[in-house]
Length: 444
Ligand SMILES: Cc1ncc(COP(=O)(O)O)c(C=O)c1O
Image 1 (cartoon, rainbow, N blue to C red):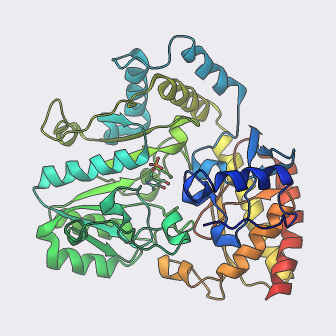
Image 2 (cartoon, rainbow, N blue to C red):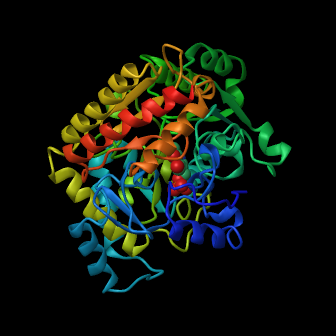
């Protein structure tokens, strides 16, 4: 559990005071372990009072340029007025109907356009976890098989099966496997190394007739940002189909992150089912899964695969998602601009690290950036991230926080530039990085 100790000057007295109260009331002081500072030296995180654009403001009035962006759930920045107005207009018509309504129909129709075949039929949930959980159940029902194949260090939510060999917050705390998962569940999960097509092909050759589905983040966002090597996803999908297994792309992070739709068309390979969430909700809780009609119509009430949800299709989430999609498709320069800012940030990190003699590998795609503190020439799988220097990252994180730049408090998370960031924020960030790299070099 996070210790209480005198303020070390990184966050102010108001945050420390709330942190002391939090650890006496909330387990570990948090509602999501990813938000604590355990992996980066401990102490109080900033307690946020309000958010605006690229900035978070804490209870002590300190401003932070925010690169967490709600762990990738935001791409338009905080409290964007047109998005807020859409939610307020929906709120004025009622909060929750517990009944069918027009906005969920309109959103599903919009997804049929932007997601194409992967949303011939769609179902909304309240979170990415629920979406993935049901997609896996659906694949098991459709194939009559039990085995789920996934990849080490990926994160797909917090239901039992996908916490076997999980990344993201679980890796941050050194929990490659949550306690409390029954052996029977573990026996039905196989975890393979990402970007290793040969191992996947061999596994699917040898045990393919047991495999219900291969679940994969097409671009990994949960052990940093790691792209598939050329041919990896294609070979994986081919081997899965040869074995009669379904391919599920978990696009909870990647959908709408690199363009106003899923990322898979950019990678040249199509899955059988897709899951999404995060960005689509525009800051409100959402998840969803979709696919071709023949598979999706195995879900109740048409078919026998059951999935339900009090909050599913929540009117406020639907309103927020419709407004988000409208902005993402209308603002044609949004993604190219994110790409330019992301590139400037990534190149800045490389240059400043080199100036201070700090070895790093920096990955970037669009507005998503992450730096691995490693002497290895490349990072292509979970092992590469695990071998990176967590202590150097912690020094870097604390130095950046002290200078008003908030990064995710883990070397396994991605930094997100939002549409609200501009050159001013990137310049300010690079100035902080210059000092933070000096701190890392000094501490080495
Ligand atoms: C790829 C991926 N899948 C699923 C999830 C779970 O989504 P949620 O937190 O909305 O349950 C996450 C969350 O970070 C994710 O990154």
